[in-house]
Image (cartoon, rainbow, N blue to C red; front, top):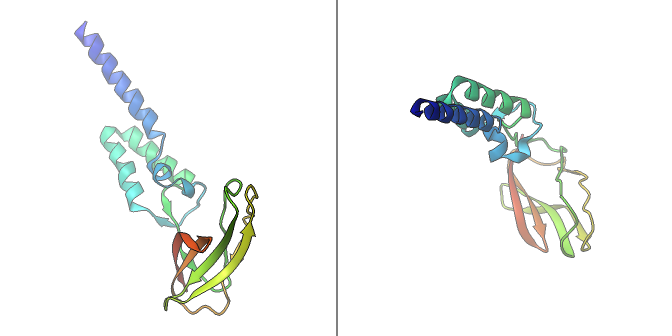
Length: 160
């Protein structure tokens, strides 16, 4: 009787580990990475995927394969060139009436507005890309999204 319970526990553990390995760590940690094809490899995602090798060879290999195929293993490439388009995706209608702007902060701290528009409550914001100025000098910049004059998101970029 005890041997049967132990066998069931081992089988349930193996099935659970195999099922969990189908959920890859790169996509869990960074869902926005889905669909990437190459780039810099994120070492944190690799380490978490390799931890599945402690459970077994099959779950570890499956986790690595799924992360590579889905793109969850690749970190963002934040190298841009002057004139490159930069796109943002806004999901759903605007929750309130607001003024939305995309700004570029230079290495010297100077802020330049790339685009600005007024959005009414319930309006969908289009995701058309903005272009970086052609006259940018190489260096470290930051692109930010401001709503009603208050910065809500900031993305560091390297201009080459």
